[in-house]
Length: 394
Image (tube, rainbow, N blue to C red; front, side, top):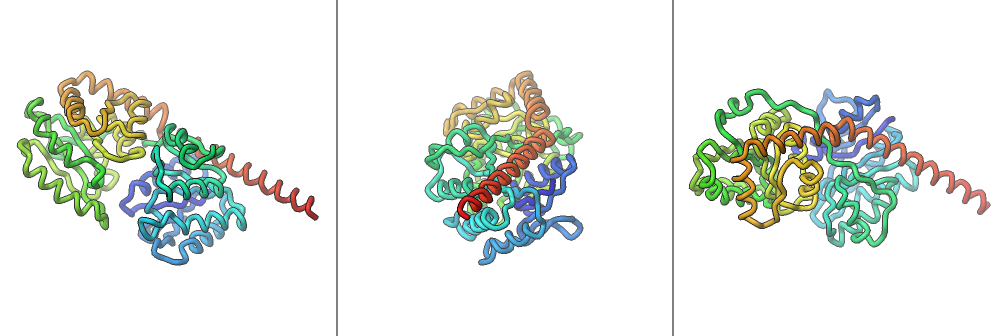
């Protein structure tokens, strides 16, 4: 098949870009042709079939998107959607994307699939509107978790018959050899958090709890804070100084290591490979690519029991989900696991099994191809109905 893939794309520092790159590679490995339509900061000169034409601040955003896809003439269009990815402001719910969707539906007749990366249990008014209208214009929608699919009717006021659940994929990867030694963590047991430093990530909270965790664990247990503020993120610029200040004020700051940077895939794997336990004390999240990648490297996790994070832990049985905003339970889970090597190993084995049997990219890619085929059939049915209607009216 020939697929037009609409998304952010590396080197743009974006989780959706990384997700797209890995899933596209798996789809291509199955013999398909994929064309990438991305923002102007994506792609490089040596990449084929990458079109960096999207500018959120452009008044002709939908024209650039529509025209580029029309030139490709794909068998299916697949859009990766996250709020803020195709907008000019916080209150703009992807209006340009909706206009392009409408034109594809009415004029071009390309089958369209949308993956919704930002679907919570409760959507606000604008999110409800976008989700409802976009699902009516698209042939198929994809969400990553069962709870997202279950709660859609409560949010949009109808039961959509074209939404499917495909879990966030992960690459099958071997841990980086001697990762701890390369990062100066030799002989240490490491609790880690990795990713962009944003207000919802709970990094300050974890550092604050480290004083109590430090008292319950020995000197071989250390905390690794890896990442940085996202470029251009107002929340990140507020969070970064607070994180660094919290580290400086920690009673056990000598047992905290900061690895700062926007990581290449190789560096990212190296950092995660050095973790004995990933902690995600997020205050808000639908699902986590960091969690899926950790599982691929055999790293168990402790997470706040929020929507997608809770679902990923329950499905994988590769860690512990604690009640949100319960510092005692979070502290207890981290300290307890760092003192129980056998239980951590059990969770690590479960993580690897989950990736191999359920969410590795090769499995996920096949599921996407089935959705594309379904979307093509649905579009053909609609075209046949339209032609019949015209004959009747004539």
